[in-house]
Image (cartoon, rainbow over all chains, first blue to last red; front, side):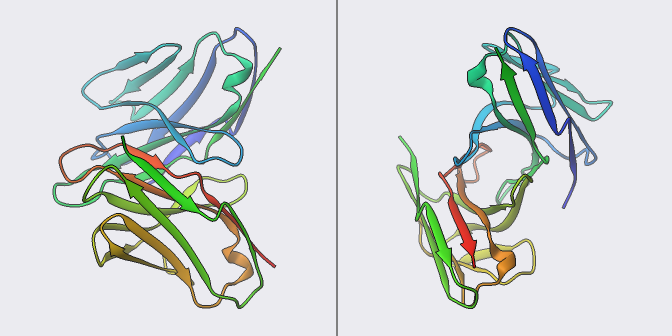
Length: 115
Length: 114
């Protein structure tokens, strides 16, 4: 399985600060890069996703930055709130025609936003 | 709208007992279906995926099996559970082969083998 490396493993940010989580991948054939948010005891939920033809995508306080040449992408959470405290997973997939899209996940980042 | 149901939410089973976890999807047809396992404090490992009825692909050799008896039903099974089968099992679906890549996960089953 192709690797996606995620860092940091855990992150503590003050309320109102910026949370940054980084991921790096190896397979240049990956063509879809989503981020998932998971609360304890729940399944991951899609947060935001990007394709390699754009360098940045923003949805509300969440932004993905994508560097194709460096094979890296990151999640930025602006104005972090206590409700953002969760585990975040980056992922990547190849979607060849005629078969399933198989996501490869990073190992996750546990984010804690303090008051 | 599409929904995914997964049950049971929690399960405690003795070593050597059988297992059956069920996942169903509503509001879509011909979905791609997936079973993932999440070990405590770790990422998600793809176990099985299916592109259609009776079509199962296994990603890792293990003590588990999967079946898809109906278009929107995906079942994870074991004949004899091992301690190492403990974990958080997640079912997910994605769109059919039309370029929609996003996964939607179920709420998961916490399996503890004792």
